Amino acid sequence: MNDHRHAARQIAVLSCVASLAGCAHAYTTWPYPGWYTIGSAHFHVHGPDQSELPATALMLEGLYTAIGETFFPRADLHGIEVVVFGTEEDARDLPPKASGFLDEKKASGGILVLTAREPRLDRRANDGRFTTPNQEKAAHTIAQRLLRNSMQDAPEWFRDGFLLYLETLQLHDDTAVFGNRPTRMTQELMAGRAIPLGALIAAPHSEFSTGDWTRSHHASAWAFIHFLLGGDGGRLRPNFDALCRALTATPPGPEGSRQAIERAFPGSHFSEIENRARDYAVNDLGGQPRFHPFAVNVKLPGGPPPAPVLASPKHVQNLLLQLKHR
Image (cartoon, rainbow, N blue to C red; front, top):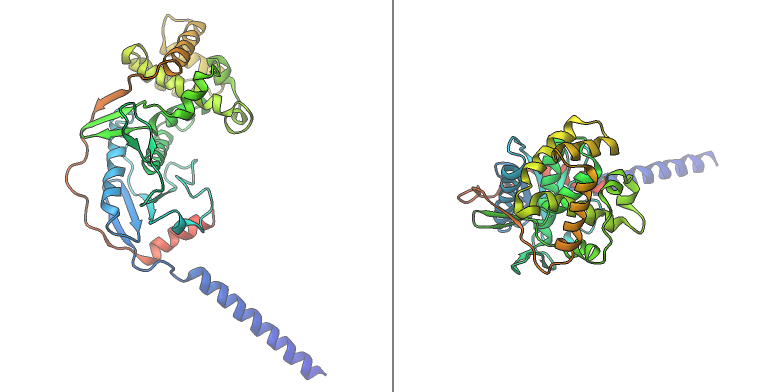
């Protein structure tokens, strides 16, 4: 009887060991042989199709240059990790949060996930050109990292509006075009659902993440940034720069935001600024079929990127495991 029990325990132990070994094998086996890597000035781009990587690296460097030179001239970030899957189906095992930079709180962390062959194109620009979901996502998350690096405590209304503004960036030769029309934003403004500036800067995080007025808060934050960079024919850019400086010098919270806005418009009362911003949001952004975006000349990276090389299986496997377990 004891022999039978001893044998049963041995079988149970062996089964458990075999099961654990199988799990460990499934967890550590490299599932993507033959991946490639390109190391550009600011990015490490990894993917299974080497033919897709050069264009992706050029696109990323162009976005980084345009956003950095225009709004973050002292930024100097390097080594941003990018994983490029062939299709959305190839990334099906990744959680939903593996879209864009995963760690928004660390300027030095996060992995950007893109797909080489996108299922759709979104019409965004006034001139009828296209912005792809990849480019929109990349512009948003590159700007997110640059903003976090330069202004870690930016209030949510500013961060939300600025990133939404930057994600529609388009590159035309040596011209960067900001402030194009996202339909989901202008629809809110066309319907008259603009949040007054005072209420916007006082809104808690929940107003930007849940509830019936979430999209209105996003649209209004985007509209105020657009007002600062596109209002009065683009002559308010100095006010935008002054606001950025003031936000870093005032205490966090609604009162600090209000003080920063008034400092950015010396001689103007807050109510006057609020009325001007609302008029621009409703009458220009929401009421006009077309509006003039903010275009600047930039010197985009020249020449082809480095040739792809075989990726380090250990390094890319570590990136994929980070994505799967976030």
